[in-house]
Amino acid sequence: MKTWIACGVLALLVLWPGSHVHAVAPSLQERQAQCIRPWPENPSYWQYRGAPVILLGGSVEDNLFQIPDLEAHLDLLSACGGNYVRNTLSSRDEGNVWPFAQREDGKYDLAQLNEAYYARLQALLDLALARNIIVQFELWDRFDYAMQYWEKNPFRPANNINYSEEESRLRNAYPDHPGGNANPFFRAEPEEENNTLLLGYQQKHIDRVLSISLPYPNVLYCMDNETGANPAWGAYWSGYVQATAAALGVEVYTTEMWDDWDLSAEQHRSTFDHPELYGFVDTSQNNHKRDQEHWDNLQWVRRYLGERPRPINHVKIYGADTGRYGTDVDGLERFWRGLLGGAASVRFHRPDSGLGLSERAQANIRSARMVDAVYAFERAAPGGGALRLEDREDDEAYLSAAPGGACVVYFTDGGAVRLMRDAAGPVVLRWLEIGRSAWQEEVRAEGKEIALKAPGVGPWVVVVGLP
View (cartoon, rainbow, N blue to C red):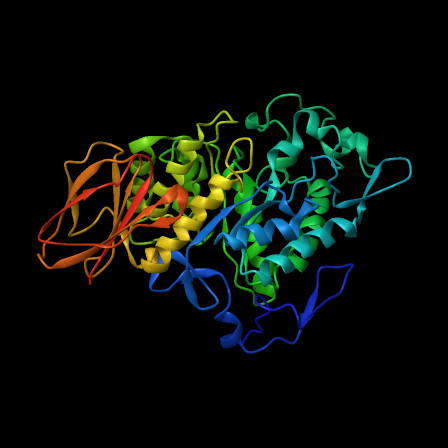
């Protein structure tokens, strides 16, 4: 039997340099019950510490391990019911540290790692673990490797002592948006350019990351940020993470985040069609869509996954008055459509493109947790099954139904619909004013047709339960 270390840090002894981890871990059964993994009863959702869990989040930054007030920020997230953050392994912002040692002359030595970088990473994982927060890593962020950001990256030939442009096949300037994938950094793996020099330094960095992260039970792994790379790139790194974990007896789940906003595009099939390679999917780019289309696209993915369901994560909910990808209202609606629509995670993207952990984001996370406390989303399904909504306009209201007749209806901006049921027995209606995180007094109703009218304008949720 393999020794499981994925869910404990106390027994771990990391010997560095090198990437070998030695541990005397508790039994397989004890550790396996702790890890984040698909819930066996409904693999569209996650399980953590042996129980199903809905992941709700928002944060001020993407590379969260680099911010100075990390502990206070995680406390704030936890206080409003959040349990999910994104963490890119990025270093391009002011005050960030890079993973390689910098010499007195300003150049980097890629053969020497900067332990200050990895100490920050471990601090995030320690703080998150203590607060039952799930951390979704992104190993590579394409914006670090193009435009002005590339100019200070240690992998840029002019910035290190380890190779030249000719030796590395990397240029010192990539002035265009990284969406064009011009930098061959993202083609170093064996199936494409097999750039063993560059790949060795990439592996050195990721080996150190994994030596820290693999013992933690609360980490998910995404290969890239909204990539346009050849699928071989993400497949290589997913396989690399899984092989490193497997050698230690560790259970991990990986995904890739594609750039295309159209979830039916061929890019996304590289994730959807390969459950053996990617244990969950991330459809964050659908959160550029609005209204009914936004909901319909998520339902298309659920149908496409069909008999091989996996968790569908939304690590980035776009939309804020300050950004280019919709308004505050768009962001809030995308959050709730994702939640009722069957997503396993929903997290507000960082400002200025998202609401982050602003007061509005906190209120909506709090309200979502309040609903989840009385209605188990992981046991429900979007759309209603035996229940249905009548007199509904597009994007007016959305339905999630649980076994036994309970359901939740989300109203985007007031409105009224009829809930059609097979049974005529009594029900209890509990209305929640989302923006105030405030329950209204319970209302009783009965019959096969229940009139649902939001108590006011703005976003509302009603939980329909049996007395």
